[in-house]
Length: 277
Image (cartoon, rainbow, N blue to C red; front, top):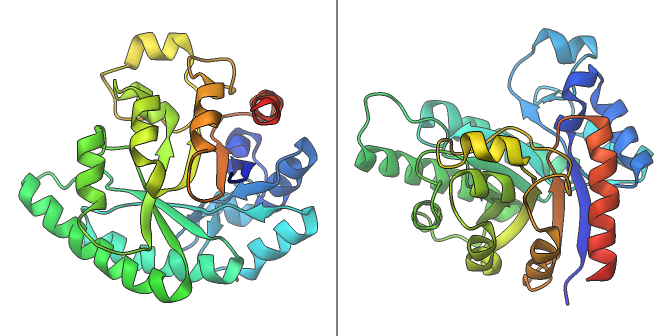
């Protein structure tokens, strides 16, 4: 049997106006063993001033490693979402994120196909995505980094669409970062979909969806940035945990919620699910 770990995407401090280091420390204080930092290109005011958790890839990757080591946690991956359909952005972004991940100790780089260009056809988009993913895999393979493709946008909103993206490039570096909340909002069965990708699962976004949001948006959107506290919404976490136990590798359940309070409630709910599984 594999080992399941509890992690958290650092988006949980987005509205707390805090730094990466503060977010990592708070995650450890709550009890999480893994964190998922977000990276960006260039420089921007909020993170430079210490009011935002995202890390510039112009920073030293050892900043992330040191923050994690100081707090006694590990990075589960990097949130490095970039539109695969737009190679003028995503090729160099992903290659830099992969190099950054290798240095900071994050085993997975998570991404999705992103919003498509307005002028391209579907055939164009899959050609562009194949080029992007091949370039990214060429950087990831020798570094031992995995690429987690997430269900999040126009083509990955169905199991068949996500499979089609995954199959574009035959590489051991390309896997699935399954998002429970996005799968639900897409109008799909998140449990059947998760079971379908278990053999390719490299990371999981543990995102719950409130009944109110589900009633308003299910079948109308392809995803959402963060969810409610795990246990407060519609996702059956015992079923998710039981499925993840069958994955061929250790899996981090990386919580995606919007506040520190939700992070605390999510941790206690999921900890009980994992303990009792």
